Structures are given as structure tokens and as C-alpha cells.
Length: 95
Length: 483
Image 1 (cartoon, rainbow over the protein chains, first blue to last red):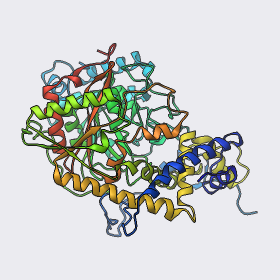
Image 2 (image 1 turned 60 degrees about the horizontal axis):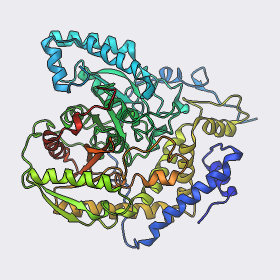
Image 3 (image 1 turned 90 degrees about the vertical axis):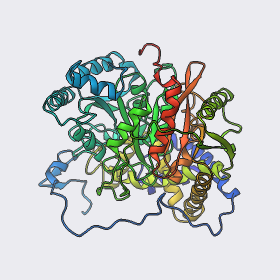
Image 4 (image 1 turned 180 degrees about the horizontal axis):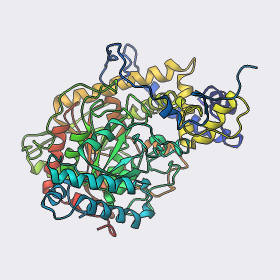
């Protein structure tokens, strides 16, 4: 199993991850090598095995529906790249 | 002062032999003198001295804890309010954490003095500390070699006596492997034992924080402060925390130790194997029974891990979007350009590789073949541990196939780097605790012995490891130039 440079570009787009044109080939090569390593998993028949998502096989703990956090908006926005009137600013999305 | 244990320092602070301010100043001086190791990303000199002064008051007025006034350092993955918290990445180079991780809060409550934040592989992805945006950390035993990773700054700083003790995090070996390569003690607790709140996430079902210290005795004290239920972490486990120091000296006569034959096959350096054999013999002398066991699915741990961890990483790191905090690119043309370039410019190559890998493994058409398959193998590996730990009390083995390797030696070949995690990764997949302790030297470089125990049996692991440190002195030997 190996990845083409076009596939790498497609995955990078899915992840909204900019990669330099000159690096695409080396990513394709690295990822193909990693996929080869992963292919070793197919040596083992795993039919009927329950997938394990979590070491404790825990389910999510629930809590009462009450307010536990203070409003920290101002504090959190002091480290934001760009804010105005309490809102996070991004480039215009609607013309 | 810098060679003393936590208990010795606590006694010195109480007897008036030295103050916390003097102790803190001594460590700050050492940190500055040894900056070429590149262990610290941030040195919190002012706040450290302020907190040391407060600790001295607390010591004088009564009600101090064992760690009150003791200078420690945090891996730069733990959010620390008002302090730059970078996770080793350009993405967070400008990030001043607005709140404390629970682990940081616990040390603050205990009155420990925070010296600063320690270097690490970017977002904890790496086994050599070479992926850090802040440059590689050096191993004090040989400046041309890596300290291991991802908690490389923590391991190097503790080995070089630039902090009494430090925290680390371990997703696939990131506490144990650098501990082994730098000749210190490192414990990865059971998944869920130490809160992950405020610990920047890499792979959430595998990440676990733990102590990195010179001795097991110190590790027990550090873990005491770190462990416990935290309602802010949804996977924190609500079980009582035992007194980790109470049973350190218990006899281990009759202890059953299992050696998986899969851990001692090809790929393990023969000198490292010989050092481990000597260590196991020491346990025999202490009254342990040794038997060979089989863990047939261990050989698939690396492929399964390198599906699961990147998959979780690709989801976790989607939060770094250049909108709310962290790096933002200059003059974004539109929203997609803002996301794509902020992430493209903010992340380094290994992080990108894992995001790409994880995105691929989770994408339509490949999810079952990779992600579900890996989770099934995770189940089998976890059962290997359950079966083994039903027959024996602990499993022992190597931590790393070799001693510290050269800076630049493996960084160009990601797969070779991944393969060096072979003995540590399965433990995270299963979620059991494991400790690495110094077990000798090969050509003047430290070797680590790994001891793996049952879920929540950290007290037993610490006891077994401590008994070894009472009959050996590997852990007391400082690197040359750092005495």
C-alpha cells in the first residue's frame, strides 16, 4: 500500500493542514512506509474481537446539570489573535 | 544541596540548615550554568523566588507539607497560569496559559517551588526530543546523544540536578524511555490515576502524567501529590490513593517475576540484555522467583499504536485553528487560508506527519481497515497483560533496545524512530502502570530496567523498584561534570 502525492494533498486538505509543495513527496514516502508497517496488523485474524477504545472500558461519567464554571470570556480573549467587542474575528465568510 | 533526596531537603529546610530561597537560588544558578543542555524552555526566576519566600513563611509558621519549599520543574505540556506553556511548538510559542493544570495546582497547594517549564518533543510526539521547536535537549551523560523523548527536558534536567524532581507525560514511553536514557527513575501510572486536566492532549486514551526523579523514594512522594480523582477529567478514576511511601521497604521474598520472551529476542542490544540479566539476578538474590512467560501479541503493538495515537492526535490537534489562541498566520485571504496556513506554519514536520496519518486512518473507506483493526489488536494486547499478570506479580523487561543514540542519528527516518518504542508502547495500549529504573551502564551510558505491574498497583511497583535501589547504587551516580 503506498500513497500518491495527490492522496497526500487530499488528506492535507481534509486536515486543513498546509504543507509545502517541496515536502509533498517526502510525506508520501514516509506515510507509505508507515502504512507498510501497519499492514503487519493483517497477519492476525481478529474476527469476533471486540474493539477496545479505552483501557478501563469506561463509559462517560455524568454530572448534574448545574453551572460549575465562571464566565472567563475576557480572560480567555486576552490571548486570542484578534477580538472585537467580545467576539473572535476571522476573515469575512459571507459576502 | 542538589544531590539530596526530597526527604533530606525537607529535613534541611526544617532544621534551618538552608532556606527554600537559598535552595531555589542554588538551583537557578545551576540551571544558568548548564544552559547548553537546553532543558528549560522557560525559567520562572521571579515567581520561583516569590514562592520560595512564601514557602519559608509556611515552614516557619507550621503546617508545611513534605514538598513545601522544594524546587521542581514541570514538563511544558502542563498549563501553568500566567506562564508561557508551549508544548514544544511554535503553535503555542505565544500561549500564556489562562488556568492551571490539576497537576500544577496540586504542586502549588503542596507549596512546591516551580523553577520553570521543561523542553519536550513537539506536542509530545517524538522519542528523542529533536522535534521540539526550541531545539534538541542534550543528554548529560554524553552531550552528543539524545536524552530520549518526549519528556527529554525533564529527564535531562533531573539527571543533571537542575531540579530536584520533574513531571513528565507518557503516551507510548515518553516518561520511561528518557528516564532510561538519562539514568533516572520514571513512573507511568495506570491510565486514569493522574488527572489529565490542563495537560495538553496528544492521544487521550493513552496519555498519562507521572513523576521523573532520581530515586524511587522521591517518585513515591511526587506521585502522592499528583495522583487522585479529578472531576475535571472525565476519564479520571475515582479510587482511593494509597500511601505510596508506606510500603517501600516491604520484603519482596517470593515475588513472581515474568520475563516475556518477546522482550528479549532479536533487536535488543546484547550489552543491554546482559545488564538486564544482572539486574534480574539481583532480584533473584532478593528472593524473587523468575519465570519465562509468553505475550504473543506484543509484536503488533507498534503498528496498532501508530494507528491509534495519530488518529486521536488528528482529532485533538484540530483545536489549533488560529482563531482563539496560539499562532495565526499573517494576512489570511479567507477562513480556509487562515486554518490551513496557521496550522501549516505553526506545526513542525513530525506533528504534521501524525496528523496526516491519523486523518487518513479515520477517513471514509479506511476506518475499519486501520482504526477498528488497531483497536481489536489493542484488546488482544491488553489480554496478554491480563493473562501474564494472573500468573506473575510483575513483568520485567528492557525500556529501550539501545542506550542513548546520537543527535541526528534517527530523526531522518521516522519508522526507525518508531521502532525504538517497541518495549514501552504496549503498556500504554493496555493502560497498566510501569516504571523505569537505572540498572547499570553500557560504555558509560545508562540502561533502564522496566517493571510493569497490575492496574493501580503503583505502590507495589514502587516497593519492588525501591528494594533494588537499596542494594544497588546506579541511581546515585551523577553524570560527569554535573556532580
